[in-house]
Length: 464
View 1: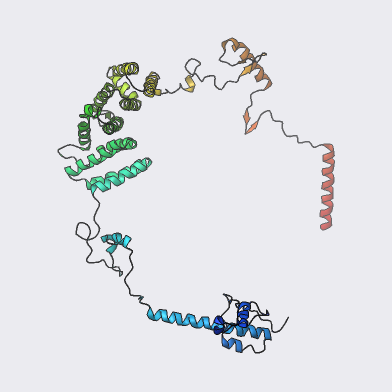
View 2: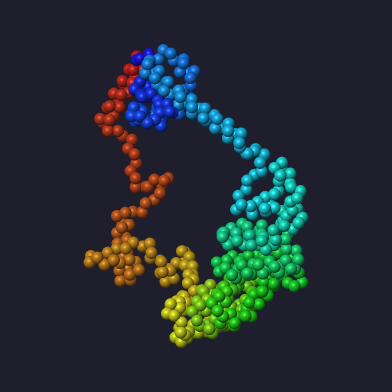
């Protein structure tokens, strides 16, 4: 390899000498020819330092081509370095930037930083003495009761499965917070509004009302939580005649109240001095009156609300009326049938009413427990023959033990199977019909085993 090998890019290539600045604007033909043939020198690689005059002078032993290349690169590189250095110095001298300049805040974000919450600290960790919260005291303002109740109601609405785990904390917090009659009324209004305004929250809201009615400690003269809640429901109930005939928005709000009242009847427990807790009888009568009001104005929305209410509470209402020896459910079903015949409702709503009557005829879809296995007979258990085998006659007709005409033949087949396949009895984890292991070996195997033993003894003797 050549000792003067230059590792710079483009080393050894023939290059035209660089032109002087004065030739760029020359006018004769030779100058134009030299400018046309001029080739721009290759740029320096990013990983190698720029060439300087000292480096060029130290390579006196390089080849002629390398010297040409180094010389051609000197003015290009040095001019660039000088221009960069002078440009940076000029920029530094003329710059107005300062490390102690105030922080730049965009105009669009100024409203956020004007909030006192962003002015807590001056950078040293100490609180700004000029800072005051919304109530003018200092520090952060505590949330109001409405904000706190809205937070945990929103949590229960989005995560109803966490009700049992979170309701204890909610009651503890409310017992520490609700200490006056006004706060208790505000709490009742907040929970009632959320439960009656959002249909999907009516069940969770009814459960929450039942739990609070039993565990809230405050009991002012105006009434307990349950009494104030029932008074609030009474206010809405008194406007049922107007609401059922109102505009669509009013009817929608009224229907949500009706469904919440149904959930409240199913979940609100009234403790009894003797015996288990009972349901609120006042809600039973209110639901009966609401159903009459809905069927008295048989438009589609009112009838759909009545169907939903009966699907929700129909079985419990009928059982309660039967215990009280009342036939209110029979009267309602008769009224539904008349509504299907006479009302000018849509076909889909009539189908819903007919399906509701069918549901009631099937005892509201309730399935009673099957008879115990010890007392199961073909008469009281429809699944008595479920696990029995199925056989086929010569012409391919299937028959089981439930077919009376084949009962004798069925028993004969079972007896025949018992003879051919005797019942297997367990014996220490193994079946009784398994063959016992034979201790006697085959003569050929026995002879091979004896030879193996003899050879093993001979090997052992040699080792000793």
